[in-house]
Length: 131
Image (tube, rainbow, N blue to C red):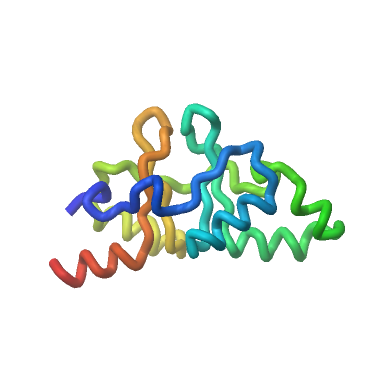
């Protein structure tokens, strides 16, 4: 089984342009009910990710009013070198990456770094259990 067989499609998880304000990024994460947002440029090239845990750590580290924090560009608070997978990776290889890095979500990119999907742990577990 390959990553492309299980990954979430672009419309089913938060994908946000890099110049969107942080508050809108949080709203999209809340709307899609997922603890990650992928940050892309106009060409859909992956520029970074924002996760619930990153937000929590950033809030504790940056001592400024929330209102100021919320109007920053989301790219200012993104992880700029996220761990990624390719759609043609085996599911087992991707799960090993997720296990080693202790992450639940893995952006899926093509060879040109274009975002093509997201591998989320819950669908992966379902697919492996059905195997």
